Structure formats: C-alpha cells, structure tokens
Image (cartoon, rainbow, N blue to C red; front, side):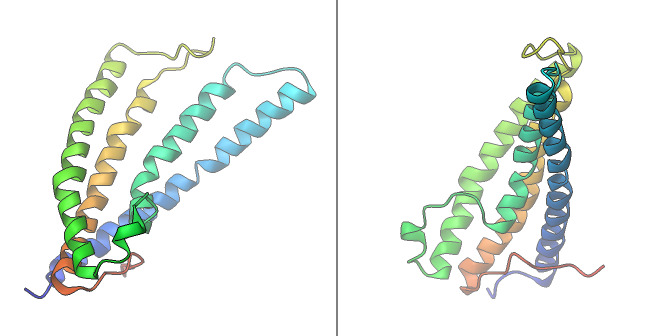
Length: 183
C-alpha cells in the first residue's frame, strides 16, 4: 500500500478548506463578544447602569466560539496531546497511534455525544427552555444546538485527520495541515 488515493487526498484538502473557512467565520463572533463586554463595562462602571442581558449573551457567545472552534483547532493541531512519548516515535508509529485513537475513541465518543446533545437541543426547543441565570431569561435552544453542530464539525474534520493518520501509518509521511484547495 502506498498511502491514500488521490481521491482521498482531494477529500482531505476539501475538508481542511471547509474547516479552515468555517473556523475563520466563527472567529468573527469575537467582535460582538468584545463589543458586548465593553458596552457592559462602560455602562456598569462609568454610568452605574448595568444591563440585564450582557451576561447571558457573553457566556453564550463565548461558549459558541469555544465549541464551534474545536474543529478548527483539530485542523491546526492545537488540541492537547501528550508529546512526551509521541514526539520520539517514528511518523509511521504516530500515524498508527492516531489512526487507532480516531477510530476507537474519537468517533464513538463524538457519536454518543452527538446523540445525547441532539436530544437535549430538541427538548430545549420543544419546551422553549429559557435561561434562569438572569431576569432577561433568553431562550436556550439555539445555544444548546451548538453542541451537536460542534460534534458534526469535529467528525467531518476527524475524517480528514483519520485519512492523514492512515497515510502516515502507511508511508511515514505526515500531510501538511495547511493544504489549500483551488477553486
């Protein structure tokens, strides 16, 4: 076996491109987050007029950015890894370990998490669940649907990472995470 087929290589490029673009799009949510926090700080400390909605919006926006950014972090190799042993192994051994980890742990865990979070999101939608953190009491179902969406985005990027890991296991060559797709 000489690694992955050209079709699988093209698939990893497209998945990586998709994850890169969605990650950058999600990063734009930091602007309203900073604006809301700044607005709240100015009103609270300079005018003694705190808002009832800023706390809810900030934790929802931050949680959304954190969760939806997970697939982008996976693409960039930014997730925690115990490199103490890993960095001393050959690229083939690293590919084998990563491949097994994705197939045995990553995908089954995310599938289970997707099923549970989908039920939670659906239930929140059906009962029109609201937050009890502040008197504003915003609806929670859009925020709760972030978790299953995160699972889907992570699994999509996980497919690319698994293919790259299998390629490394077969060839000893690690594919670059910065592969760009020509449109």
